[in-house]
Structure formats: C-alpha cells, structure tokens
Image (cartoon, rainbow, N blue to C red; front, side, top):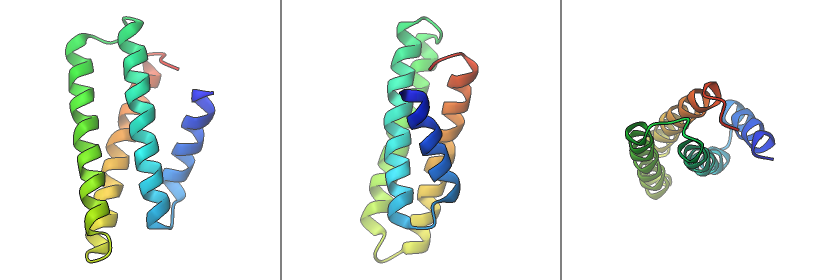
Amino acid sequence: MKKILLVGLLFLSGCSANLNQQFATGYGLNTVTRNLTTDALNANKLSYADGLRIYTIQNNTRSALDAAWNIRTVYADSSKSQVSKANSALTSILTQLEKLGVK
C-alpha cells in the first residue's frame, strides 16, 4: 500500500501544474517520509542519529510548506518555488530510504 502511495506521490510531484496539487503532494510526501523513517528506525535499517537528521529535515520542510501556504495568494512565485524545494528534499529522502530497502 505504501509503495502505491509513494509512486502516486512521486508522479504528482513531477507533473503538478496546479499549486494546490503541489501542496497536496508536499504534505503527502512529508507524511510518507515520516512513516517510512519510523519504519526504518524500528527495523534497525537507520541509525538513531540519521533518523533524527531526517526528522529535522521533515520538520523543516513541513514548516516551509506551511509558510509557503500562508504567502501563496500574495507571493505565488515564491510560494511555488518553496514548495518545489520542499518536495525535492522529501523526494531525495524517499529515494535514500528506498535504497535502504524500506517499504
């Protein structure tokens, strides 16, 4: 189930033309990476220190998404750029977790 959700989110992150879709993708990616990080920690596939680093990145991307959401109507271009950067960071985390065999 997680794999199907992951594939769908990655597809959306690559082709989202609508800013609201990009936000939905970002929040979804954040949730999926948080759940997979927890799974990796529980399966001892990820060190505690690495898990903390990932959780910090996830918290920062969540804050960036929230900030971008708050400015979207006034600064749409900045908002879109911020969402794109957050989605890119989260996609990178997902790629690394997948290399560890976390599903």
